[in-house]
Image 1 (cartoon, rainbow, N blue to C red):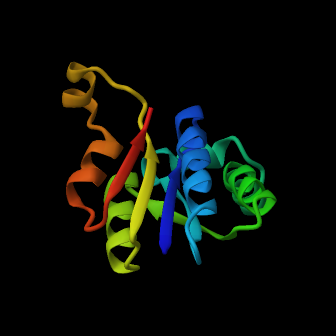
Image 2 (image 1 turned 45 degrees about the horizontal axis):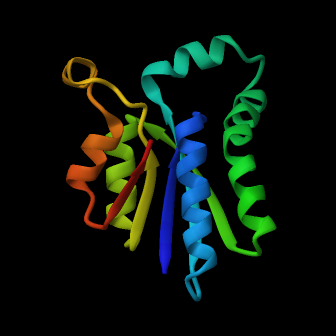
Length: 137
């Protein structure tokens, strides 16, 4: 079973990853892919806080590596992917293109007004991906 974990470096994303790893441990032949989407709207700010493209890539990998280590500790097969773009649309396109059988994503827990004004990545993703989505708070 091919499962995806969307992360953003938040505690909620870490909880979603732990949940995915727990379930994958009990599924025969489960594979995991951790996906981080570097938000293009924040890319200029990210570049200002780093000294080189290599250090920027390292900062992004530091968000992915804890999840990879957790999965490897459970003897699970895991890969990582770092994408650039709008987090919700990029994630939707990637998950739908790569035929995942499940997606795990954390939710920031926005209230109704915040979600209406800001939008919620987990809500948009849930509505548009073609596989089951588990949202973890």
